[in-house]
Image 1 (tube, rainbow, N blue to C red):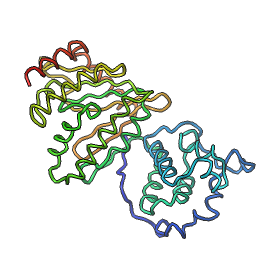
Image 2 (tube, rainbow, N blue to C red):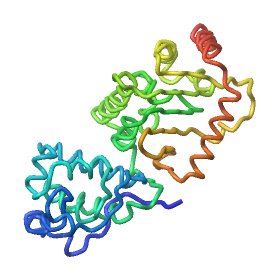
Image 3 (tube, one colour):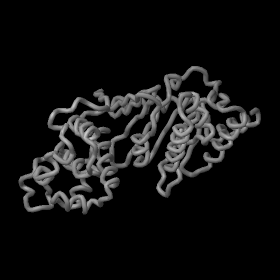
Image 4 (cartoon, one colour):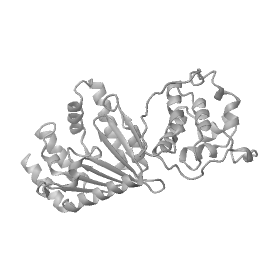
Length: 327
């Protein structure tokens, strides 16, 4: 499995140029953003026309769209400034067109992306075809932007947790207790920002075309009184409420199951209609995205084994009610 540390890399003298003096602000942008919709299509460098097959290239596409929107430009407007069609910009952002380093650089220049961020994305584009991606945080993640991007596109999300309630199902006060325990150096503003981000992440489950969500939780997580008895009781009641949603299935692995494969740790499996599936694993300060077929197969098998010992949804609800009664 290939891996990449996403961070600032040493900049060459060419990349260190201020955005206003960078070549991509002149004829370079038009030269490299050749558009098959235009008459000079025969000059375009051949690139794959299939959807992005790696997490890296998909994330680059997401960033390009985000920077365009931040710049207040539509695809048509961005294309017009570079002498190409709006559909060319759209194909790059949606993955219909393969990524070229020169295209990425030109668009980042157009959107006035800071030099350091531009350099990081260009370097990432150089290895866009490699699979697997891990990002080491220097502290507690200040947002889960990358994960949220993928969750928003997923058709099905399957999450196993053995220590606490899945993030997509947490109440704000339960989330606060976890985040505070993980890092007690957070200021109140930082903590509130993290909680707000986590709550915003949950919107994915209630939108009009929400993904199917399967949550499997180890029973021990239900008994761990995070935040105190009151917080935990309200969290458990929230689980019972959200389990009634048509797109949510909740199952618990009872302590009576003994040793089982889930003891190896939590994971999140994201499935997509038009793109390859991804497994997301977070451990302390490392966020890991896996996409090699052998890794996906291993986690799918692990999930099947976990479901093999998990209680059915009805029995799960009864167990949670009994724990609420004890709280």
